[in-house]
Amino acid sequence: MSEKNMQSVIEDHALESVPESERQGWLSLSWNTAGIATTLIQLFFGALVTFVAGIKIGIIAGLIVTVVGGALGWAVGHIAFKSGLSSTVMSRMYGFGNKGSIIASAIYGFMILGFLAIENALLYKGFLFFFGIEDTLPAKIVIYGILTILWIVITTFGFKLVAKVSSYSLVAFFGVLLYMLFDIIAVSGQSWSSVLSFGAQFPPEVLAGMGVTNDTDKLIFGINVLIGSAGALALVDADFGRYARRSRDIGIAAFLGNIAMDICMLTIGGLVMFAGMPTITDYYMKVQGMDAATAAQTALQSPDSIAAAFIIFGGIIGFILMVLAQFKAQVLNTYSGSLALSNLFDNLNWKPGRFVFVVMANIIGLIMLYGQILALVNAWITILGVITTCFAGIMIADYFLVRPKLGHQDTSRFGAEEVNWSGVISTVIGVVLAHYVLNTWIPIEFFTSLVVSGVVYPLLRLYVLKPAYTVTGKDWSMVNR
Image (tube, rainbow, N blue to C red):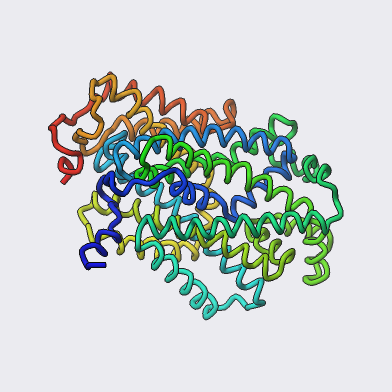
């Protein structure tokens, strides 16, 4: 490969439209949308939701989020397919303007790189647990160093390599996961009918402390836990949708990603933890000397416990499962994170190339492991989901509602103003109303943020803060250079 071609592969059209010659079908896209959604964190969310709501209500919550998240991802992915741009570069044209897109890049990048840091921490703790290593500075340097180099090397060479790695590891992951699921249920001695019908597992007083007192509360809890990831996945769908040959290719990929995340991971996470809970608690009692109550609490305390559970169940097979789950997701997190950073710093007039941002994404992920930053990501995961849902909703409203009203049918040939204040203000209003004002009356927060995006933004854009760009007849990439 020539130096020029190598440079083109590394840049991966980070700040420009993907050409028709490089577009892919739904299968290539789906390896990525499903790969980033099938992680230990999502298995943990599945176990948490089903232990609070019971398996049946949990699956209903997953189905609702799948429909909403898939539709949201398809709509955003369609815009990416038409424009050929990644989510944050796309936000310049649709909803936020050139400098306004910095907000989208910063928040989306913070969320994606937060996931990168969380997944790194899970892998690290899994390595410690499996090999019986002490948590020391040399251990951190060696393990995190090897992982970081892997993410950088694989992600550097663009979409094709990322998709290939994700495809192989996703197939292997599901193969090992299904093997372990059947093995755990067989060893537990429980029937399939019993594991497929379990109810809430937490005591009533614990559920009451979480604000869950009836079936409606259980459904709302499940939707709110799952929807944050669905909002982020919609923007990820755009990052890969720019490579779609047809709109339906990214539509299929968006729905498959949500099915993998909100139905498959939810159901398997719940079944594994329910059937395997006696084994896990017995391990903590015998090996670590915990009493029964502490052991049961530790078994579903955090995503770390999911990694430990699979290693307890499967030994080397469980360890392989953990590595496969995180490996593909980390490559995809690094990829989307590098695109967000590319747009952010391009707007700040620093353009060193995508490779620098691949490295920077991983450095930021490592920095997040220390201090209170990772705790902040965990604490803010719900509101980050609301914000990313607002971003997606505003871009959709701009493309499907505002642009046709303005008579701009050729959406590939516009300028973009520096800041689209309608998008910025609508985001602030949507987040404040959804998370702080109306959350008591409308507890499913993303519903509020989507309605605000679809109503407030068009009103502001069409009648109050009218567009400042002009149609020049030039390509979008030329207007913004």
